[in-house]
Length: 319
Ligand code: PMV
Image (spheres, rainbow, N blue to C red):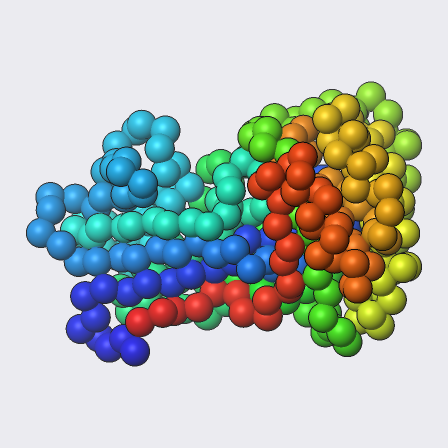
C-alpha cells in the first residue's frame, strides 16, 4: 500500500510476444499482442543524492547525463517531472528485468511502463491507463523513433489485445489456457534498424506493401477470433501465414528460418518470428499435450528457450 508519504514504490510490468501484425502495425494494420510471464521491475526511492539516478546491474547514470544508457527511462522520467511541475527531484530508480533485451520480447516497453507506474505513484501523479501509456511511449519514441504502441499496450494491460494505432486496443478473452514456446536466437538487434529496413521495402514496392498491410490486418482479426474460440490449429495456420509476409519484408534471417524449420518438424500448429526480427526470438504454438516434449527438443539447440502462458496482469504496484 502507498500513501502520500510513500518513500519507495515498486512497479512491475510483463514483456510481450506479437502473435500477428508486427511491422505492419506501424503502418496502420491490426496486430495481436500477448503478455508473457517474464517481467521488468522498477523501484523508485527518495534519497539524498544531488540528482535523480538510474541504476541497473551495477551500472548507474544521472537522469541529466547525455550518455546513452537508460535513454528510454531518462525520457520517461524527465517527462513525468515536467508534467508534475517539479523538474528537480532526488530519486533513485532501480531496474531489474527478467526479459532478455534486444530479443523482440518488449523489454524496453516493460521497463518504461514499470518506471512510469512507479514514478507516478511515488509523486502522487495520475496513474490511469492513458496517462501511463503516454509516459511510457515517451521512452519508446526515444528508443525506436516511430513505435506503434503495441508493446506498451501488452505491458500495461496484460492478457491478449487486438491493437491498432487509430482505434487503440480491444482486450481478447481466452476461452482456454494457451502456452507458447519462445525460442530466443540469442542474436540481439536494434528495432529501429529493422523498422528502417521495412520502410525501404515499402518505398520500393508500395503496392505489394499496401496489400500486405491489409493481409496483416485480416490475419490479426482472424487470430483474435481463433484465440477467443480456443481454435489452436487455426491460430497456428495464421501464424505460419503471417511469417511468409515477414519473410517478404526481409526481417527473417537464414538463422531464424532454420530455427523455424526445426520447430515445425512435429507436434506444433505454427511458428513465426515475434517482434522486429533480424535476430531476436520466434514463437511456437505447440499442440497442448506435447508442449513439454517440444520445449525439450527446441532447448537442446536453443538453450534460451522457454514456455510462457499469457498472464492477465499488466502493470502492477508491489508495495
Ligand atoms: O522491439 P520489438 O522487437 O519488440 O518489436 C516491436 C514491434 C514492431 O512492430 C516491429 C515495432 C512497433 O512499434 O510496432
